[in-house]
Image (cartoon, rainbow, N blue to C red; front, side):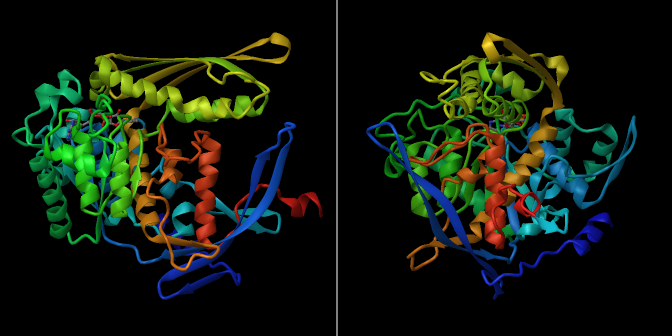
Length: 516
Ligand code: NAI
């Protein structure tokens, strides 16, 4: 009811010569203002502002979308599926605090707003999913793979994330959802996962595995009448594969390595390659280096999007806003120590050293560009003391605890200590992020751009770094600056939405009030 009402109230039509709404497309021209910087020999910076004309063309026809999750039967996979069903059926259930109704809190596409302008002195905001047309989560079809054969209802109970009364209501709908057989290369995830691996593709022939996954995608798409499919990895964190020249460096070599069943080709790389060969976008929600240079090249050749790495759900989200705040306030963070303990299967997998290393790297690299932006505070090195500890404590279940200590140097040698204690059901944070990653990737598949002088429309860079807001270690193409600052990532994402809809980027100047 409320949803319907909101839809009726909010609707945007941009009143400008720069925007047209024709034949199912929004076409918007946009003046992008940037600056070129030259470093002169005498140390001066010569800065030349420039304006570039872009035209963005967005197909407004929303497709029927199929979502395939690798690790469907895990905590995230089951919570995501349950959450979408609960919302679609508008379920409510009882908890000890009373009646709870389904919502999409934690999802930027469903529960955040973007400022579109001012009405008098009132700033007006629109839900993100009304600035540009997104797939409605009620209309997607979900499937996927898991090394564990439990159906989604059993798996949801094993996960111990949701309230019992909600589980009871969802049970009839999730009982018949059964994960497809998965690729399992023992050596890549922790040995402690072996006991649940009872739903796996036979043999060691990686090319056969690749072909099976490709067939699964095709069959799923056809069986559900989908216009397109997106595949997302939310399976266990793998160890890093050892990048080897001749194996991982080019698209051709990766394909050859799969044919030869090379040992250093991970299960996740086989899923990614299968997905790309089927012309579908692939999203990596874990930290491992699935998207090796050869896979990136393949994605470019096949014109599909890849996104990674590792969902940015809790501790890192705070870290990349807090360090940004400190450094931009002229305060110098000198050390960050992060302790985590959790008791879910993710924690169990990460209790193994090699898999922990993947996570450690992903968690550690997230402030480097922020400290690197300020040469007053960090004239020589921008490396600070940064430690990550993760402990598996089964009793805590999915309720992850994160404790962080930030030590900073302030005015005249003073010391500033900030300590945070963060407790949250991990999968209730991750599931809305999974939804956003998929819906925004799908939208970007429908957007094309033209820039000064280009004859034909192009798609965005196939390495979709704009989704870095949702990733702990954003994957960027070579020669692309890495941005970890949460504020900068969110404003880039909001502004791309606005530019494609025909609105200016928001610079928060509010000059009409400051210079009346
Ligand atoms: P989980 O352990 O509950 O689920 C992973 C599932 O993947 C399991 O059901 C497992 O059987 C399955 N699996 C393992 N290898 C597979 C393979 N090769 N093919 C198909 N299925 C396979 O873990 P959870 O909590 O759902 O997390 C999933 C991933 O997301 C982990 O890598 C985790 O590090 C990452 N992540 C989670 C966040 C969060 O929950 N807040 C945040 C950031 C990342």
